[in-house]
Image (cartoon, rainbow, N blue to C red; front, side, top):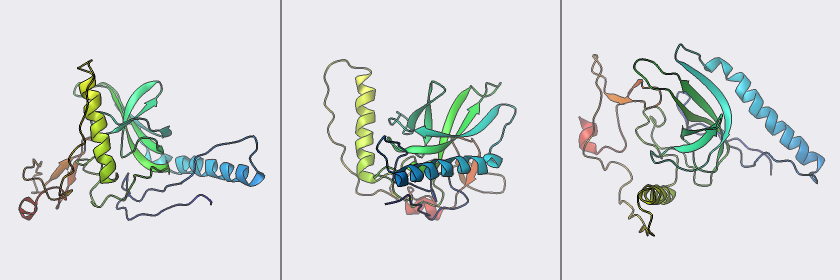
Length: 231
């Protein structure tokens, strides 16, 4: 089997849809055959070319810098994002799954009068994909950032939630605890009966991207019930 690329139905360069995935990790063994060594070399070249060709997309502003880097994703954080390490510092990565290897866009934000310093990342390309990864059904996923896990199979979402609950309680209570399995919802979409939406002067309704802090116009939200969507 060789490296393969899946072109999914993404829109407008979505950070977590239309991603390219590769089912093999880059590794070198002493007993590797010449074909395996050649494959690994080509795989590494693809990664370098991707980063090089996308340098034009990155920006360096007065208070922030963006970089494309390769990361191995670790655990799931309390806010629902995966975690990784960048320059010895733990950072959050949106759009990932624990155990994946990805190319992430890192946003390094300096301290300013209105903002605190922070480093945040968003998945731009998946190199080693989790078996729990799926194609997000929402066309706005990755832009509005209202949903964290549409790219993750629902049964694995429940396991991740159990891990988060256990970790948070364990940080407060030192005694032994048991977490019951989370009861799955009958509906994965169209279940919310309450929502808050910023509105622009021209009447556009949407959400604020939690990474960029920019307004994202949305004309339909898959987790809101049909009554709200009709409004």
